[in-house]
Amino acid sequence: MSSPGAGKGGGARIEVLISEADLAARVRALGEHITRDYAGRSLVVVGVLKGSFIFLADLVRAIDLPLSVDFIGITSYQGTTTTGVVKITSDLGRPIDGKDVLLVEDIVDTGLTMRYLLDNLATRAPASLKVCALLEKPSRARVTIPIDYRGFVIGDEFVVGYGLDWDGRMRNLPYVGVPRS
Ligand code: 5GP
Image 1 (cartoon, rainbow, N blue to C red):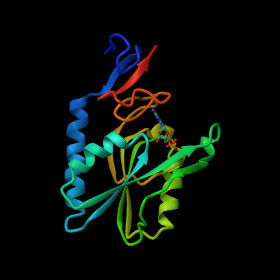
Image 2: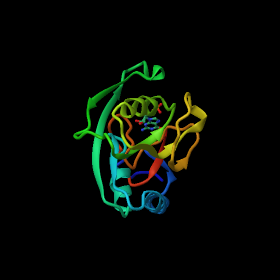
Image 3: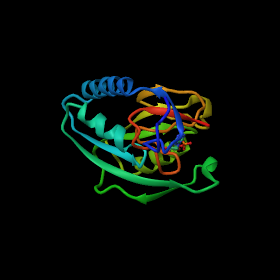
Image 4: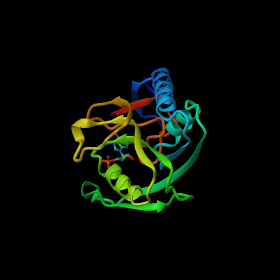
């Protein structure tokens, strides 16, 4: 698909990888799965900023449980992402001790960001800690992350849209796409 004019893709040609309809169907299924697994309990859904915000907004509406939403903001130090050096720029608003926590991420690439977050959140004594990732790029994995709920497995391609950015833009594309030059 080509974006006419400037549009959401800023004039770049974006090839659709996962359509809006496929995203909606998968998110609905993930929500049903999570609802079944946590039946009778309540959840704290933690979104990793910024990339997860659209996925999280759709996911929580597909979960039929009492839940609260919190966010954690992180940044990877430029040039050292392969070492997994991550800094928390905005911490959770509330303690999570004794809570069932579901960490929601846009994409697990090398896995280093998620490893850091899981280690960090585990020190706060949640009752349980699980991971829900919209996308996984297994070919790029440097560490193994236990992804409990996975949307789609993709290849080694840079993707944008549905919350994922390209230099801060294109998060508002309603599909996941691959920029083509
Ligand atoms: P990891 O630590 O797993 O290598 O990186 C995770 C983070 O890198 C994601 O949360 C996301 O912000 C960014 N990232 C990894 N792959 C992609 C991609 O294909 N597209 C975009 N827009 N961001 C990505």
